[in-house]
Image (cartoon, rainbow, N blue to C red; front, side, top):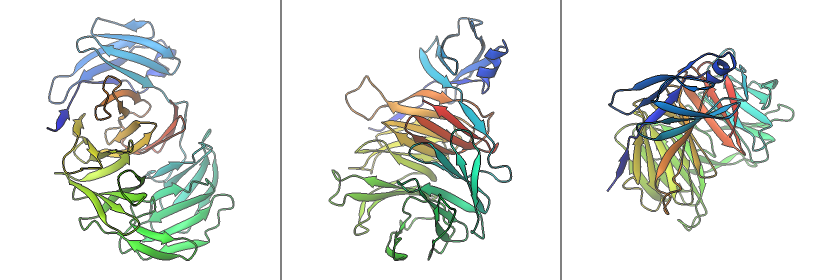
Length: 362
């Protein structure tokens, strides 16, 4: 049986950290899908009533508990916020594995910036239409970009040069992680083309799942028609697939067997790659679209169109890895849609509709 979860969720005023610094009260609420929301206020010394309890963990982290349901959430404020895309919405963001550099879309250009302070190192110009996706190579010295001009460009982060442009796609490129076209960069030849045959691809991710398939490398894709498909990169063979009732917008791998995907209707769906025909669980916080998912050390960071960004992590109370719970929410944006969330090496970065890149230490 599919486990459908719509638990109580807590929300806290986005600038609670500044509020406490200025000795102000901040609002807090507990809500459940299709139920009445419970509201109250907190101060740095505690709640004003017995609806909630709170504990200040650090200057930038507070744990709040809803007394009635015993639901607890840690709220984390950003360590830095930088407006590095003043002209266009930052629809795609990536950070190097060390967190030292970031790259974000800025219309037809890409801005490469310092992760710690947001200072722009260089602007990469060359696409003739809006850039939709950016992705660092594992070396952190090379950046891939894909745009609405149907081209993929390979850039040197060190000097800003673009030695390679790959062409052959027939539609705007909306996702990069090797793409559904597999390119040999040295020869600039397309060696494999994989088509899910189910509408535009919204997101893809390369998987290393040797325990699941004889092919050590797989590619997971999600489409506007609600199809999640896993293919072998070696021979394009379809390994597994799942059909959802609404558009799938993001996906990530949690563990060797678990995949998580999000939908335009707010569903967060957990799947077992060994049998994707039925979901392990379906969670739903609200009806806002899931816009981005990023996984790091068994935790999934989820960004939504209502500006919420939170973790879904494995429950320590179960022996299996199929029960997912929310334990941390990232604060900062005031209901500004999250475009990208990237989790790497204890650092989580987000880009939002207010055109601000926020950096969190978790």
